Image (cartoon, rainbow, N blue to C red; front, side, top):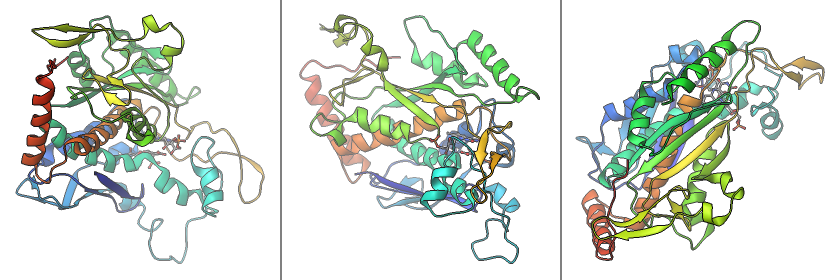
Length: 396
Ligand SMILES: Cc1cc2nc3c(=O)[nH]c(=O)nc-3n(C[C@H](O)[C@H](O)[C@H](O)COP(=O)(O)O)c2cc1C
Ligand SMILES: C=C(O[C@@H]1CC(C(=O)O)=C[C@@H](OP(=O)(O)O)[C@H]1O)C(=O)O
């Protein structure tokens, strides 16, 4: 069983994470983790904070000579901005504390958090509710990718919509090509026409007089998952419920769908279900992948396709109506600084959450205290299903 926890505040000294349950001898590449952290910081529309931060990981336990040792792995990502917040984030009481921030931002965790944690200062709420913590999750996801690599699984993403502007792709869909093109795009969108319009829409939201924020949709795809990860036997073993919960846990994500998603409700079954074929040379084949690679809570061998809708960020430069939590007077919500659009960053975080979920599902099915044992179990299973006609298709 894979277990992980993160700690840390947005403007505290650092973020930290512990992950436990990964097998020994898994290769861990610091550059590969840092590459993912850099991807998360990128994307057109991010605010001034990303110019302060330059995220890199430090590994404090669980790895020796570039390989896991089988024990808990402890990670640290420092917050550079902490230097500017030392006094305001002091762990010990200070003589002149910062005045409390009392004007909750509609849409953020401020209002419910202040009531729930009996706080008169929304700063104590935003520090942990902030998506800064996703840097720790992306570092964890990067470690899990090492296990996915052993199984040949790739996790990719791209942005499919920002501010109501949608990318269009004509079949056949080549996920490698889409992800490679998205990697070059400032908004991580592989459709050049939509990309230009998305950039223009973000620019508009940065201009005086029309300042605002934008949400959107990203898609995460996991290629080469063996059939049979997850299970239908209990609600909490179903892979679709685990993937959607993991992606929904990302700040500002308000909808998650797998494959055709909500579209399945609109058309008859004959237009939804992916017909099954068999060819001696290729094994089992599907004509379509409306199920998004999951049937009955299990991977079916097709690409796993997860899409998520992100709301526009709630720290608005032209703040919305709020109420001062001390005086109960009508006020404008608190504003310091904010991202305008973080959908490209959220796509990277979505990949990390999918990688964490798939690593957990792989370990549940194949187990093993060492990578060698894990591989032995994995190959034993793959040989067994190959004997029944299954073949990997290494779908693009
Ligand atoms: C990568 C990323 C960056 C974010 N940046 C901001 C931001 O700059 N300003 C903001 O108000 N919300 C931002 N958010 C969203 C808030 O963290 C989120 O809306 C808030 O915690 C409330 O949670 P909820 O939207 O899930 O209900 C960001 C989210 C992500 C994933
Ligand atoms: C720090 C990050 O994102 C932050 C997420 C966030 C929020 O409310 O979620 C608010 C902003 O924080 P700040 O007010 O310090 O600029 C973002 O910058 C990050 O992604 O590294």
